[in-house]
Figure 1 (tube, rainbow, N blue to C red):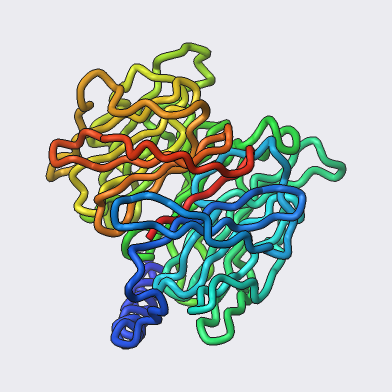
Figure 2 (figure 1 turned 90 degrees about the vertical axis):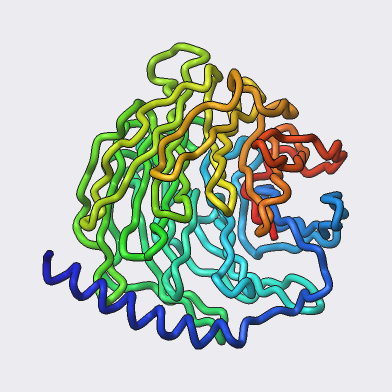
Length: 387
């Protein structure tokens, strides 16, 4: 084990101790509410839409809160994780695609409010991940700019008391690809995410079929990139189950063949290297660009954007996956995008490119029952946080 990895372990232990203390005083101004759903409009003047969630899963628009940043317009760069919550649930982080910034928004008893904004240090921020007091962002970059803007990651320390993001010196790492144009051709890098321990950071590169892997150092910086080849082509979104296994969607658009979308599950070794468990399990659909896993880890759901269906997978104890039925667990409106579960795993929601949020009740056998929502959002809305 390297010295940097040993220091990372020490860093994680220290952070876990501080988290344990904080959890006894969790900020919870929303007691008595069933929950909330958030998405960002991604319009010229970006805003977050806040929906109250009732006990039966229905949604009611509660607020439209400007982020203070700029969106990218109705042609959104696809990605998973453009919105993210702090681990105590008090703060919401929002990627502003149009001006290359992250907005910090505070959840209070009076509602959501923007408290600050910071540059991401790159172009086209598409994904945000949080682990304790660390926040990392993925910039998709632009090859077509002059000068070209590389795809990159950058880290921040988060001050939970002031709601401030402070750039971490020497935390920026360039990736191997960037989007060709702004924004229609992206993303070529789709998601950034910490593993469950916070010791490792991963990025999926759709355009090169690579998965970037970083071990986290004691000072919050990432190690040098250890690039791994994805099991299948065009890895897009990913999620970890409670046991630490990683599930990655494969849109396979590079092959130019419809109906060949897939999901691969991986186990993670002590050095963060990924080894396939179930490789490229087909769902017979097109462009599975988003994925969510039930909080108990029993089921995973891939959202197939081009074929407008959600495909369910049953997850075994060791991370092996098998398709539920023939790949159509639920029909959606056209262009389904980000999906997310309530904390209890009872409901699954999805925001669509056409301007709706759909919802489903998760049954014991993994089937999905539509909530028949008629929730409208602006076309081009992206990102989803559900509580």
